[in-house]
Structures are given as C-alpha cells and as structure tokens.
Length: 252
Ligand SMILES: Nc1ncnc2c1ncn2[C@@H]1O[C@H](COP(=O)(O)OP(=O)(O)OP(=O)(O)O)[C@@H](O)[C@H]1O
Image (cartoon, rainbow, N blue to C red; front, side, top):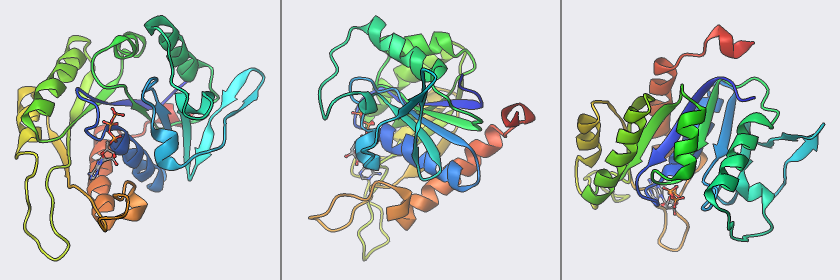
C-alpha cells in the first residue's frame, strides 16, 4: 500500500509539461535524500518510461509488483505493461482498476513522497483518485497562456470541491532567454501562473523557463541536463519539503 505524502501533479490541458514537472520534482526530492515514488497515472497518454528512457519491465513477487528503479526513485507506469507503443483502449472502470493496482498491489516500501503524474483534465481517473485518496495534495501545472490557465482553473476547482490540499501552481514554459542574453521573452503571455494562483487562493510555487539547446537537439528535459532546470526544481522541491515535512509516520 502506498504511504507517505501523496502529491498529484495535475493540469487542465495536455502538453503543458505535467509529466516533465512530476519527473523533475521526483528526482530533485530524491537527490535531497528523500524516498520517492513516481507513479505515471496518465493511463492513455503515459510518457514517463519514454522521457526516462526506461526499457526494463517491473518484476513480480508473491503476485505483487516490484516497481522499476530509476536512479534513486521507484517508478510505475502503465507504459511498462504494454507492448511497445501499443495504444491503451480501455473504458473508464478498467483504467480505474489499474489505478487501484498501482496504489495497492505494488511493493512500494518506505515512501516519503509519492508523486502522481495525472492524466490531463477532470476525467474518470482523476475523479476516482479524488475519491480514493482523500488526503491528496495537488500541484497545478499551467503555461502562462490564458487558455491553459482557464482550463487549469477547472482542475483546481475540482481539487477544492473534493477538499484536497492545493500546494500551489507551477508555471511552466514561463519565458525564454537566449543563450547570449539575459532578457526574458514571454512567448506564451505573462503572469498567467500568478493569475491562476490568485484565483485558486494559493501560491505560485515556481516559474520554469523554456529550456533549449541547439536547434537540432532535443530540449533538455531533466535536471541533470540543465543547470537552469536544476535551480528551478531545487527551489520547488525545497518549498514542497517545507509544506509537507517528512513525519515519523512516513519513516515506519
Ligand atoms: N520548460 C520546458 N522547456 C522546454 N520544453 C518543455 C518544457 N517543459 C516541457 N517541455 C516539453 O513540452 C512537451 C510536453 O511536456 P509533457 O509531456 O511534460 O507535458 P504533459 O502536460 O505531461 O503532456 P500530456 O498531458 O500530453 O502527457 C514535451 O515535449 C516536453 O519536452
């Protein structure tokens, strides 16, 4: 059974960087000595195995699943259980059952922080989780773009309706700074994350810049690839550790 502080990383729209934020927050918390689980609950659009380049599959013991280790985090994803890039064609209740398995049937061991990469929006899986984990904490991810903010607000309102704790808002892809300059270019608009935080009566936890390398390379996705990302996520993870300290309960 999953234990520790459970943090759902959620958003309204897809593509705003929810998985990227969930993964980097998990890695940063783990680097500071915490026991961290990362659970990819984006059943239909899972991307954690691809981003982390994990090709191994989880093993089982006594009919329970052993999560896959990546650096010092324990990872579970729907992507581990499918063949190649096969699409998952399930109806809501089946997907809900898989979520139950991930929470109850995996040998998680001691966990200080469980980071859940949620599906975008307010669909069946989100609703199931809201009911299953009454003590859920939530981080709402948005870009500064007004459309993303508008849709993310719905995810925030769902968290409020179910009495979950909103830890705050992470604004991703906030701005772009060219490599030879210091000026910030607000490509997707400005202050959308702050507006969302104000509307939800919560805090803006971080503004994560658009990261890039050369035009013909992949953008750096992980803290290990970019000092800028590392700094942004260090500050985010410090804030989360202060808001949700590891208690004796988690150490048992
Ligand atoms: N700060 C950033 N700078 C540059 N690229 C980024 C940044 N954050 C995310 N990306 C890129 O944006 C794309 C979408 O990110 P990600 O998959 O994390 O979004 P998501 O919200 O989880 O999407 P979905 O809900 O569709 O799974 C990816 O290609 C990712 O590499």
